[in-house]
Structure formats: structure tokens, C-alpha cells
Length: 225
Image (cartoon, rainbow, N blue to C red; front, top):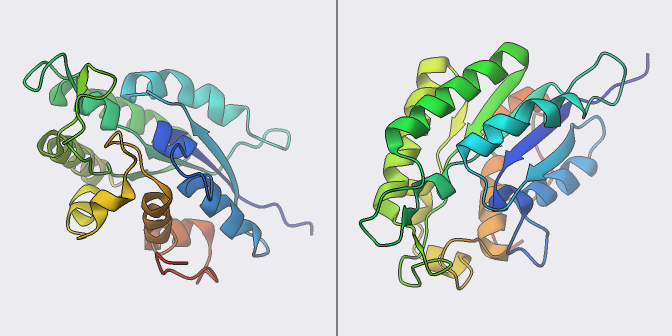
């Protein structure tokens, strides 16, 4: 019988797109190449759009997912969501209103995840930390780690309620002594080192490996690799 690999659609913002990683193309691209090195591993579709928040992902996820089915009457077996950082940004001044309130973000996230879960397996990863010193971004957006922490907590709690695998990112990144060197000068986008760090967490994430039916990965997990 001919083996048909699983498909994983990864949807999110500029982090999913891979912005800032001039060496490896981003953590999604690194994961795609890693999977290609082994037989019978999932096919990955990276669908990141710069500036996206939860509302825009909610509008586009289903069409993006449905049209990636390579075979007739077959759709991808998994969706990985990485979204929320842009929703946390305060507009106009450090104490301005966020692009989307934490309450509205959680409501939208819950609706989105419930909808995806009805159709396929869904997994979620958390939000990256930022360097606040270069703010504001684009002369009008203020990203703060305290806000990001609050929104990632909303993601984690929602995933727990819905029994959806969640990979925390923010606190773990803040606890890394060198994390500021993993960011672009704008303070919000990851550079090569930051994308490597996310990639290394992903290839050691039991939930992803279980879904992919992989017992181990051949890729080294060192950030210096």
C-alpha cells in the first residue's frame, strides 16, 4: 500500500512567515526541512502573514486548510496556530488601548479553536518575548512583555479548557539570559538565533512528535547547530 504522509498547516503572523531569519528562513522552514530529511514525515505548509492577529487568522484558516488537500476528499490532518503577538500591541502610546483587548482575544481564540477542533487536530504555541527599548514599532505600536504574558495566559487557559496541546514560549524565552540577542533591532521579530530556539523547542515537543508519529528526530537540538 502506498504511504500517504500527513499534512500540517501552520498559520500565524510574521513569526510563522520566518521574518528575520536570513539564514534558515524561519522556524517553520527549519521544521519543514528537518521533516524532509526523514522518510514518512509530515508535509508542512507555512502560511504566515505579517501583521496578522487572531481576527484575520479566524477569517482565513478554513480556506487555507481546505485547499491544501493534495488528494481528492482528503484534507490536512493537523493545524498549528501561532498568533497573538500583534493583538497585544498598545496603539499610540505606552498606555494606549491594545489592538484587541485580552477579553476579546480570548473569546475569538476560543471560537477559532473550537471550530478547528471540529474539523481536524489543532495545536497551539505561545508568544515570543520582545525587547521594549526600541519601542514604538512603526512609530505607533508599543509591545510590552507584561501584556504578552497576559495574552499568553489566555492562550494557555483556553487550550487547557478545550484539551488542546499548548507549547508555552514567553516565560521560557524571558528566562534565557541571551534572549535579547535573538531579536531583530526592531525589538519584536526574531533573528536566526531566535528562530533556531523556537525550532529546537518544537522538535522536542511531545505533542507534535506524537501527532507526527515520530519517536525521535535526527536534527541536533543545540542552538548553535
